[in-house]
Length: 518
Image (cartoon, rainbow, N blue to C red; front, side):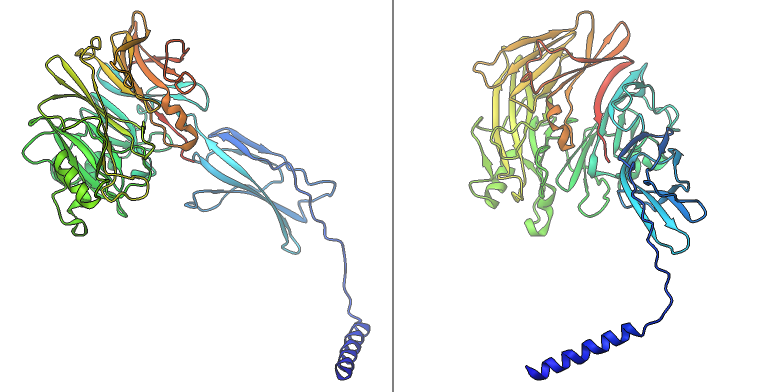
């Protein structure tokens, strides 16, 4: 201990000596550090002016001694920083693409290179960033109007200046979200063909044509596109084609159906977010039967089986892989055969809380009308899905007024077990949980003709509850009218709901909500 004490004393003496003999000349001055404020989160429209005046406190920061920089970085990490100003105060015409950015204000001290920085969120929107995409038939021409949620205005005919060739016979406007090119996630389907549309302003390029997504020589004209799991399917001209997107940007291959034609509908699980070996459902219109398609069954790991089979056979395969969890439910016995398909729709209505939304299949046999509710899951029961196929619901609708009318439009709720149908100017609801089922008048749009009836399935979590809102397009005195009826608080009973109403369209064919993607 005594030896250690001597050592410490010697070290202390050396340090003191070094300090006492240091006669260097130093210029010690207080560092002028700004107290930056006034840089707050901003939300601006494209081509508007972004003006920001920062507050730097009481100190003077002369241009000779200091320089200033304003720059933005896109939060998607895909773009280089963009300098938008070099003055103390920012006054910038926004030419950035719509998106979510971080705005940085930096002060540099010229003599030392020191800098101080403050940041804030910057959201750039255009009038087309969010709102209803209203697909119209303007004397047969496909016309797309946008009801902007950003400005509250309707932007007509947004494709007119896109350079896209005229397309006729509009069918659908779809958003495929993460299952296609992020820069062009919207699909326009028409009698003339299909094309993708750009994310920001529905811009168009020749390579957006659907033909670039097809590996076969046949020209495909899709009537519907549905995605589930690691793939997506389309039906056109009676043939179904599959495209795998697991780790690759795949192409649609040859028709999966051989020797028969399929109806322009595709059943799939649109509720579960994690599906691996998805089971799709088709309708064989030649042999009048439901068919199941599980593309991953062809893989050697799953036995190298034929991925297309009747529902009964697919159920047996499922039971072999997952005894007791292959086919569940007893809402009906045998799978229907010999009926004519009227309509099919996928919903998020999940009576068993098993991430197994019902796919409704409306069939007729003469004057008899049968409704089947089928649940489609994952052959491997991966993550969300706890079983493969479910017999979830059945109802005999034969006694419901005009339910098989040749001009009837149908829509199924994801809130409860409700079916809606429209004929002419009137909408009815059927509560499928009642016994016996019966129609109930919802509302009449006097003097109008309903041309579109649907529930828009929102994809962003903050919008999911709006998926219960009923969307109605109609024609009144030659002008298209869009109405949206609130569904959550009304519990799907729209008799006393005052809708949001928009006018000035041509005949409305389809409506889909464009959600923000940033």
